[in-house]
Image (tube, rainbow, N blue to C red; front, side, top):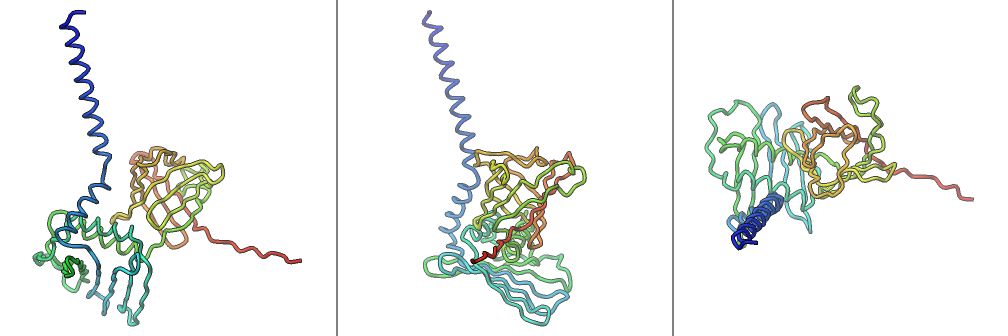
Length: 300
């Protein structure tokens, strides 16, 4: 073989190897994903502003006298969420444990919209008279000193700021009042008449405190989908199954993507999840919360 041809072949192989390497780098780099980006941003914010140690959310004014107050602060290895509400003439208080995972979700939302920079926002010229006002206070600790950032929905937000404010409020409301952790069993048919011939009663849903979930075939023992769920401000939740090897969506969710937004409705013992691919009729799976059944044993 001529020396020139050998050189050309060698160069071609090198170019192909470089192209493959670049493709892998881009693919892996992009799949390195939001988790690493969120972590890097969190480290940067903590280095500059300190660690977020307390979050307060207050609603005052409007048609009801009094106020609603929510506070999240460290307690032990996790966090404690406390609510108090005296807007209906009688003060009501409650508290619950909040996991580190959920507090980190709130922190990621704050960092995403750079709310730590919102201390000096100008008053909005579109304030509604007699409207309720929502106020959020973030408390950071750095080198033994604390610093607070205060903002409300009466301020003139930066670009996309109102979306961030609503997203944070939605997450706070969700974590304060919605308890999805536990086991759920799907009803036999999807809610829509178009799917009346599809049986989905085999589906069980397990949601953990850290936001991880699995939706599987409890009758045949087959895997379905699993991953993490994140609550969004628009009444949807994101099901992220990108790290799962098994991916077998429910029959009426055939076009589901590995990262998919679904609409949710929750009333305590019933959870509705609606998948919409934008083409076919949306499919709503109805889950009933599983309760422990106690059996009486006959003692002879």
